[in-house]
Length: 115
Image (cartoon, helix red, strand yellow):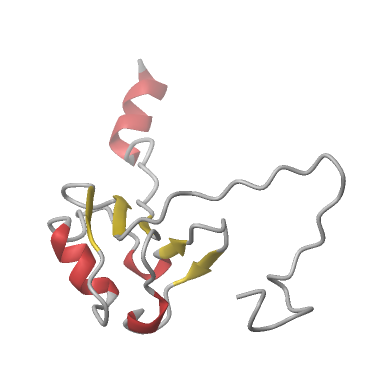
């Protein structure tokens, strides 16, 4: 990306002592978070986020589907927009956050207060 857009956000300046880590090229997509079976599957060009979520058994009951995001190999994080079809790249990770667990209902709280 830095070569196609010099002086863009991907064009980083290296300084003495910096270490460049080049991960091995991976042709997979990882699906984690509030899904039925967290999984790593083969990247399929043109497939959208829902395709990959289905490969992980779909979202679990406590999934916050509207908050899903993608982490790219370069560390960039972006929220899924629409179907996410154009956002998926080899090596990325799709994460579906879960809803926070409730501490207890009013009956439990009153039970503790009266005992």
